[in-house]
Amino acid sequence: MPAAVESVAAKAVAAEQELTDGFHLVIDALKLNGIKTIYGVPGIPITDFGRMAQAAGIRVLSFRHEQNAGNAAAIAGYLTKQPGVCLTVSAPGFLNGLTALANATTNCFPMILISGSSEREIVDLQQGDYEEMDQLAIAKPLCKAAFRVLHAADIGIGVARAIRAAVSGRPGGVYLDLPAKLFAQVMEAGAGAKSLVKVIDPAPAQLPDPAAVKRALEVLKGGKRPLIILGKGAAYAQADAPIRALIENTGIPFLPMSMAKGLLPDTHPQCAGAARSTVLKESDVVLLIGARLNWLLSHGKGNSWGTPGSKKFIQIDIEPKEMDSNVEIAAPVVGDIGSCVSALLEGIDRSWPSPPAEWTGAVKAKREENIAKMAPRLMKNSAPMDFHAALGALRTVIKERPDAILVNEGANTLDLARGVIDMYQPRRRLDVGTWGVMGVGMGFAIAAAVETGKPVLAIEGDSAFGFSGMEVETICRYDLPVCVVVFNNNGIYRGTDVNAAGGVDPATTVFVKDSRYDKMIEAFGGVGVHVTTPDELKRAVDKAMDSGRPTLINAVIDPAAGSESGRIGNLNPQSVVKRK
Ligand SMILES: Cc1ncc(C[n+]2csc(CCOP(=O)(O)OP(=O)(O)O)c2C)c(N)n1
Ligand SMILES: [Mg+2]
Image 1 (cartoon, rainbow, N blue to C red):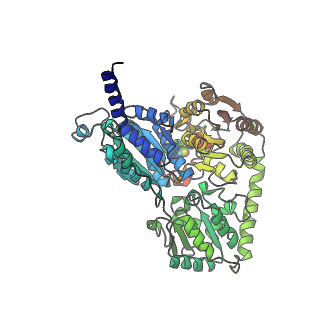
Image 2: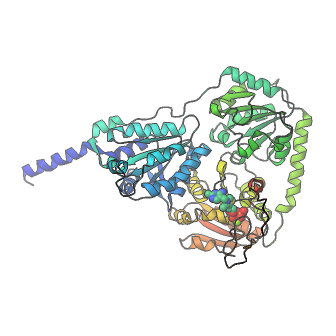
Image 3: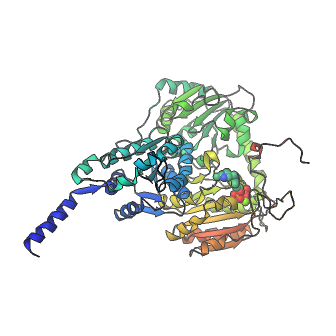
């Protein structure tokens, strides 16, 4: 090569080495802050970004629909206390991801939805750009915080703000809008590197006021029939040891909310899970730890809570606005759960009075009575199976594999599995959460496998499964240790409904009879199994979990076995007008 040409080429390389751009700055900012995985769906303007992120060592998992990628990111956030990242294209992809972002915010899961967006100048003049939408404005009311970055030099700050907003205080969903033009914006590499921000202490401890702790201890000590309720906030906090110590040192019965199951084993002698209605009604002092008095706890009032005014509530929550949301909180303790529980523990020494034996004895008796009542229903080896018979088999699976992660959605399939399947370890049960939303199943299962490396058992109503079912291809593509069991009762709640008009259309809640969901996964190289008895079901799940191979088991459930809306049929409005 002639010397002159050589020097021009060298100069070009040198110049290139000194430049960076939006693509690389976003990747560098995420990596600098420990983000190892992105869940998303490619397309304009983020296809190359996904490729480059993968090339840079971030694990980029492509889904079939953004809602599932978003749910995966949200539950990754819940499991790791680091924001899960979902990446989508503009307008329709963004909207598909938005349900998961809103659900994450409602459930206090830290996640960041990063969406590419179209040209601001055209969007703002509404001139009809490709996938035109004012995404920032739409996201804002549905998440904890929403940011847009317009200049490459601001990427570091934008990513830092998104991370801090997602995980600090009460965690939630954050939207980060990255216009197409930003990715290609160029800046000098040294200045680019300096513009990045490593978020120091993204979720700082928030210590409770000692006076609030003292007040809480006094109220708790005054209880004759005390109860501790654990919410998924308590599980999220990863303060497992102090929470366990608080419960065991006080001897107070505890009630785990759905996703708090396993924080202490459901088989723990103080667990009141099987005596729920008794403890809600009869308790006089209730300590809520990361549990909100929303609809899932009947707002802390009404019939299920016994005599009006008979309770005193102590509430531990990081969000001060949570206090008095539904009823008066006698002793609010505001701070992060680990710090609050540890502070309470300091005031609980050997002289702490055990709760009256009359109370703990009554809770124990009720719990044993209810467990004994359920036992024979779990042992029926019949075909077709009812829910209890099938769940009896799966209950044994989790007992034998307490480390496995259980994903669960549906109506009867959800409510009955929650009651039947004991959990033994923290953060092993992932389900429909605060909204009772269908469609989280495969996204949650995929992220649980990816983030923890543990085997995953997803127990899915046939309707629930359908919302994210196409992701069985994703499960096969990444060869994840996920075993999906579809409880196939031919429909929503039951498969026996009939069309009241008598026409050819089936009833609104029934599906194609005797479908074979197991065939779906076979199309992608996974293992499909069709079972009709609890024994077959147990064998098939064991085999799947031993092998770690992607498996879908079509479990035939008696179509007449379920009830309307599972356990929450009372929430359905009733028509008072008689049909003519
Ligand atoms: C996004 C969303 N759409 C609709 C619903 C209403 N819904 C509640 S449970 C359910 C499905 C119940 O059927 P299935 O999953 O088969 O459970 P089963 O009761 O039959 O066991 C539906 C559609 C919902 N909760 N979330
Ligand atoms: Mg069903």
